[in-house]
Image 1: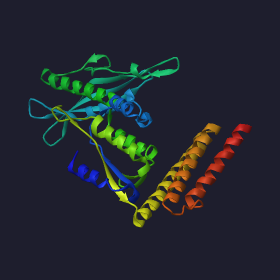
Image 2: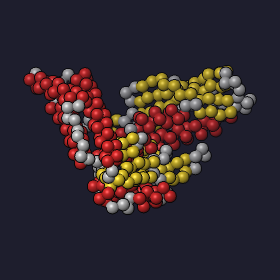
Image 3: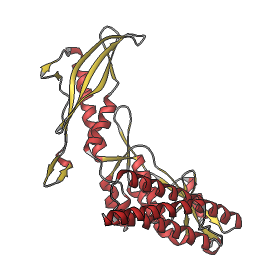
Image 4: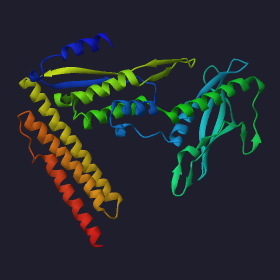
Length: 346
């Protein structure tokens, strides 16, 4: 625990009857996170794992590894610099191929030569009994050939290109098997919203009512004691960091209630805007609207309105059911319902 965490924990010891709840904010360091470790920790703590981001797709991992290989550089014997560029060339049903291009540049970054020296191929996952078998995907080693013919790779540069291939394979496995910090942040935001009844206030801070403090503490325990962030330096030395989730007590003053009422209204409007966007996309992309699609959107609308009303009543405020955003969302839902009924008649 940090000095800040200890100070804030002590401040949270105020009597519950003077608190509205907690302002929670988190810090997730950049690095690599083991998804299975998060799943196991959720099971141990009794947390719902549904908010953990899905497993990474091998194709996405391959594309990320290829991007990292682009602009790899190494020195030439005559004092110039070789730049490796990766260029897209072919995307078939069974595999994708990228070209490895070597550019030799002088000290002013002027290109002196430009040669294709290799290919990177990714074999797409196969489909078995209608299901895509992601585990069958494979990223082949870089081959120093082009169109089946050997390319001109000098002896002096072979060690550098071996290093490039090793880094490419390492980056592919890390991107495939581990999750990045952005996905962990999404998981925390979703869990604060849905499991802790959190309301976004501002700048990554969420209000969590006192009634949901136990769930919040479990997520804090998970991130601060059970989930490793692996960080690698330029020499690939590994170190481990941990995330932090801080809590700031929010005292039941009128100013605090006013701030939360404003946050509740803003959050409801933002969510209703998202729902209307999804309705427009459904109408544009689908010729028929199914009952399942309509009910999914309608249930989300009802949940947004119910949470806003519940919070507003608890904070002794007033929620305008006839606000502009709500009216527009209701009209969009009616239009979607009509499209669903028309689809069923046809």
